[in-house]
Length: 158
Image 1: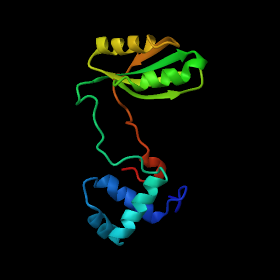
Image 2: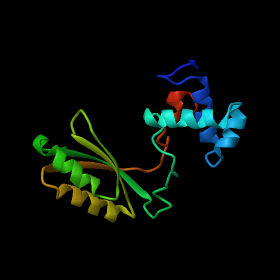
Image 3: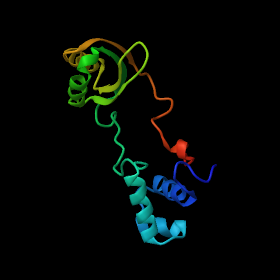
Image 4: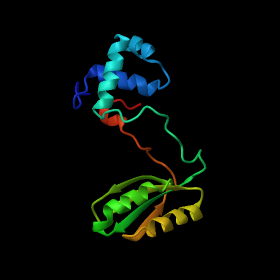
């Protein structure tokens, strides 16, 4: 593992690893495990948050446990002049988990969650009703092989 990854040193990586492995552990205990002062851990976490390395500290929620067990990937073809309007309209859909402008045959790639297949269809119909959205292509997920992850990029995967 390289000593530095875009401004992260070994102590940063250790702190990230400890916080990931023990998310409910206090800063004092993280500092003890890392062998540094509590203020050092706080300063490092604050810097990594300010630099955008850490994007959140809240709990990760399960769509399935919240009553949305069906997930789908939908590609939208959109009118290019309408992208900002479409983005705002998509943001208002609670079942939309994430969306990206992509290259290739579609324009916007979306991951959505629904209570069942009929609900997924209703969500897609709502997306198609947005002015500027021309058509969609959708696939329903069957099972998760690898969950969304970023930690391996920092070398702190479990």
